[in-house]
Length: 285
Image 1 (tube, rainbow, N blue to C red):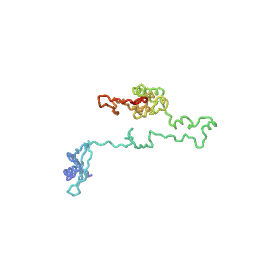
Image 2: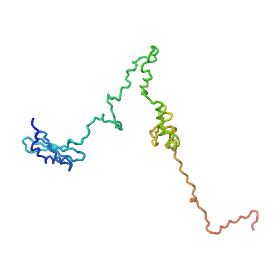
Image 3: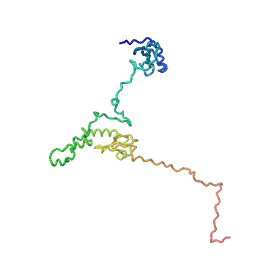
Image 4: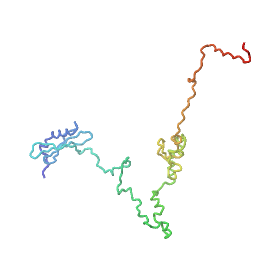
């Protein structure tokens, strides 16, 4: 095996390598000479410090070579390579491992793997009775015994998605109702000053279940409780039936009416009164 001793002519071509690095880099970003590395027979790479902001620890690598029995050293390539203390980007991680809750944006599609542990087969059909089989009622009349699983209440609940391992107890419902009434209940200052309660507001969306009798969700974007659970006793100024524009104020009548003309006398003496007509039963003199 031949030794990788740097070729003398290629190792001496430091200025040729520096000129190539200066031509490739931005002005003033090629630093000190760091040495040479033999890449092969008559192939040497010269290293220069990179002073480019954001590339700390990187080096300009300029490779020079010469042909066999030739005295002229030629330029091979100029690249920017990371050094032992260079700042590098993290190791590439597949997108499926980098994805986090909240990363999905509008218009994005998130495919799921066939073996996703978060999913399991739904209704597989294994528990269904064979085609053209008797109904559960007919089977109960013929052979007393347990009905098929498809006739059970639990199976129907599973298919409709209503069966859960645990649900809220009466205590849990009571504690939730207390929290919601403290934030948006009838005792809040906003409710005390409201023209009406949420029970009569058209923007109220009632909850499901037993809480439907006392709580709902506000759907008015201008209300302070928009998107929150509110008590029927809560209220605010954005009530649907309180959005009536007030009547414009009527100004009082003017003290001086400039739209009329007042008759004024031109002399100080009173005007002569008109002559009285003679009575019809007296002869004229």
